[in-house]
Image (cartoon, rainbow, N blue to C red; front, side, top):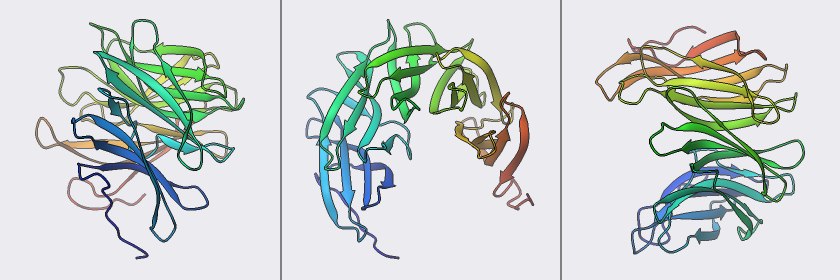
Length: 286
């Protein structure tokens, strides 16, 4: 072990969400509170020896911030700076933002996104081939279940186009990558509100304008699985990581294993592996 430190700069509950190695040390983000019990964003930078070099909070009075997906919402861009997708609540409205920060964690710019009459909730982002950004999350319209929200921006975060993708039930996007044909591959999940254990991993392929080309569901249809994360494979196929639900303990709890899938350009399974202990506590050979 090189170091093992606990950090809490303001005395309130503090939760770290993600950390990356930027080539000079460790950079990450999380959530904390202020004395008025509003939720704030914080950003930090540590040396490789675990010495705190920067710690900055970002907030506005009476705003509640939500920091995106655990483990992945903050990334480093090709210019060495950082970008970060999140959403916030204010005055009964929820809207999304994309922030770009320099290497001192000072804000270069922030952009916000309100899409028609939807509440917009970004959870993750990525860069595109034209040096712009693609943002993934969910959108909600009063009286209608959540749908997947996809936003494309230019290199300065200015809104270019968007797409809301959904069906009969509730859907949410968790990450997105641009595919070699210029379209986008979205990882996410769907569930049937009010129906126990209806959650399944979901992958959507779109064209370059965000129009849905196909949607696939992976996992056990009878037991909750989990959100899907997607990536490009070196051979032109795609990788999907999720959980394969196997056993229901109670209405709120289930057991499952890591589920890694390779799919082709049409979403058909090339191979699949389940990893970890199964219900009996045994490991299966891959």
